[in-house]
Amino acid sequence: MKQLFFALLFVAGSINVNAQGDKQAVPQEVQVGDILEIGRPDAPSYKYIDFPRPNFIIKRGGIANYKRVEGNKVIITAIKEKKDGTLKVKIKRTDGGRFFGSHPVVSADLENALESGELRRI
Image 1 (cartoon, rainbow, N blue to C red):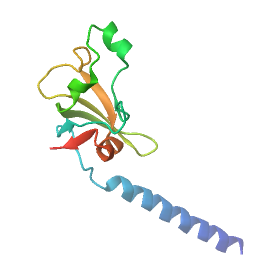
Image 2 (image 1 turned 60 degrees about the vertical axis):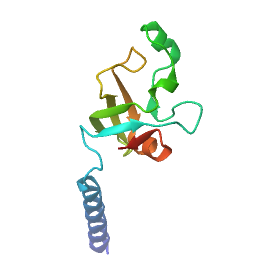
Image 3 (image 1 turned 180 degrees about the vertical axis):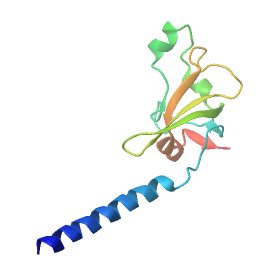
Image 4 (image 1 turned 180 degrees about the horizontal axis):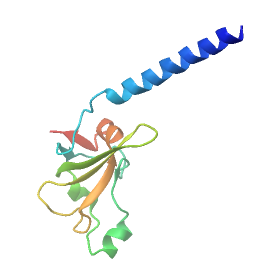
């Protein structure tokens, strides 16, 4: 009886490990170098693109106008998968400028930003 229990436990563990390995083998929909466009947020402010708060923008000499970033084309510079499975990306403007005149790169939660319309594929 013990041997049967351990055999079932081993098989269940093997199946779980194989299922997790297959999840990581799925190719990502976006890659470094893909170009996206910043869209309009559903809420009054951006929730999934981590733009800095206005006081940090002003301290670095920028102008905190979130309406001006809408429509900017951005390029993905880095992709990182978090422990909880979400994709965090670093984005910068394609024209080489800075966001708000102060921040060259910002990060975003890719999946949620695409779903909410904060980021759009071109």
